[in-house]
Length: 142
Image 1 (cartoon, rainbow, N blue to C red):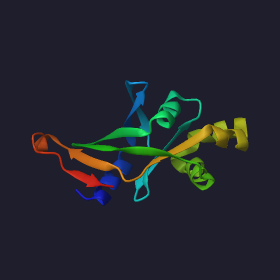
Image 2: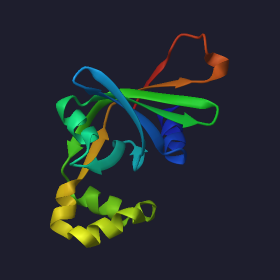
Image 3: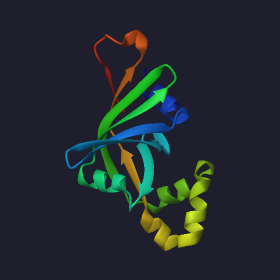
């Protein structure tokens, strides 16, 4: 599978499960990814969340997408992205209408201080399916 095909599958199945480290204790949660493309895998969370604190303390992670018969696992490091343009893109995207009431309630300054964006660039992906269950892993650089 090519990385372009992987990005297509990830965007078609945007729920990803993210593993983090919490003082030596693994934590996993499902979240709604914003997008995946040549610039990386992008998602957002809130500054008050344990998830945010865990990624700041240890940005190494593995994410997993369930894409029909395929499972895509990507390992890498999430970087905090302090870019107002990407925050505006996220908030104004049709899939993120649920953010609008928070923005209206808090006001722009407080809301954008709360909203934190992370990006994994240069991840290493592995695709799994039942047919390939016992084959050696092959990795695709994203």
